[in-house]
Image (cartoon, rainbow, N blue to C red; front, top):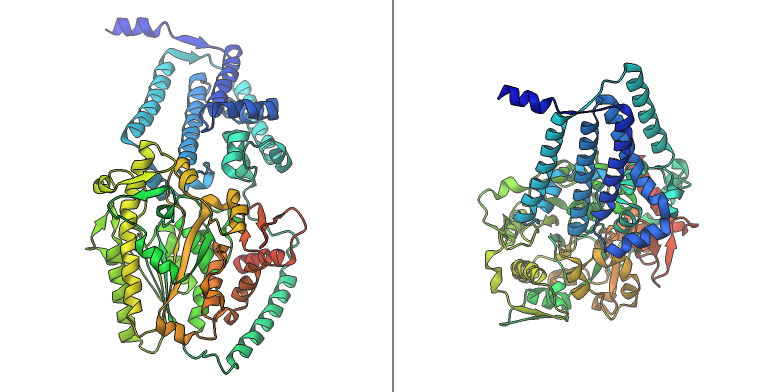
Length: 635
């Protein structure tokens, strides 16, 4: 046996520098081809991209692979290890990017490696066959590398050659990072097939690896153009004086009662949407998973908010609403709560100054998104998380909506007993209808019968069936909590809104996620905001309506569709309470919303749907908003 092994090993291939270097170039070219091959786009798109961008896009994705392979080769003096490790990294990143785009309509970025728990949730969406196949593929790659390392060896290089090669490779990598890969104008001038402002289309058109590296290198939080701390502070002081005067004038108005405030219940409903209201969806057997939402919406102020993410990123929507700062202007962070590292003024602190008792509740882990610390910094008096739901029932893997609302009612009644003369701010984040929406989440979802026009694939029908099964539970609890507060003598305002669209496929979105026909503004903006637009309602009971008479805007009949970026929503809620002038920043947001209702990463839109680029001369108020936001975060 030993003789046979020696005989096999004696036939090992020994490679020298002259052979290894061409092989590294060839293998790097193959990996580059793989990067484009595995991107989730139609085959014809690659031809379009290559025709428009030529050899440049190939070279920009080939260069980092080549430099990585050369660095490993000279460091280890081993071609197999060089090609194997480089190939494994390229394949792993490309596969992860493909999955993230398919399931979240967003490409892979370096910040995603911080979001392990969030990625684990996405991974649950994969079928067992896909998971096993992917892991099996990686295992095969590792096995091939191991076998190749046994039979392929490299002749020993001199230390001088290895050191020179390593230094040159690292130097080339450093220089290219500082020049080619950080060149914003080069990146921007490459053709993009699709929406040039959408990150997914940028990655697909410019090549995942180049776009991935460029995004990482250039992702630094920088001061807004023209920012001056002293001038911004002076401008803020003027706004504070103006707002204080407006608040005093309101207090002096005889017809307005500003001494008492209603209780405010903010409910963020996990993955809530109006998909069930689509004209193309017809349910059988009188099933209606949006029955209560429909009836409550008709008696409420309602509209839509444009949130930061699709299919996930709940905390970013929370950040927008609770701080009034636009997550989209700080995409460099893995999640925007990372910006909150100290006591921070915002939506909650306004209520605290007005004498409210503020508390938050979420049946998820307290540490997730660092809520246990962030909520304290934002001003909540207490935060009830997963540990307080230890014996609560679950459904689809998460604490039920019913258990969450049971606890909400208990906390409301406890508050009335302990603080009978103090208004309550309760911020509730639900979790039951969290994805993925596979058969394992709701095994009985097959009982939901509905027709779709246009027709959907069988897998899309199954996904929607599971989503609607859970949505029906959510709808029942919405009806229950509203009817509970309707019967209360205590004045209560409920703001019910979604964090993001559910994690559904592009086919479902194109078939059933459309803008309201009575809103020209939403029709105009839909190509930019469609994936990120979710509903809200603001409801008040009779006691609250009586208390707020004369304090709130008159357009409660909702004679027009309300649309706004989510960072406006906190100020909008204050406006509905007649309290926007209680804080200068929130008052400024309230006024800015009426002129610039939507701000994205790449552009902002006025009430007529006109688009303005941040590269152009900014609207004065938009510029000041960016400066004020930055000042609140970092000064």
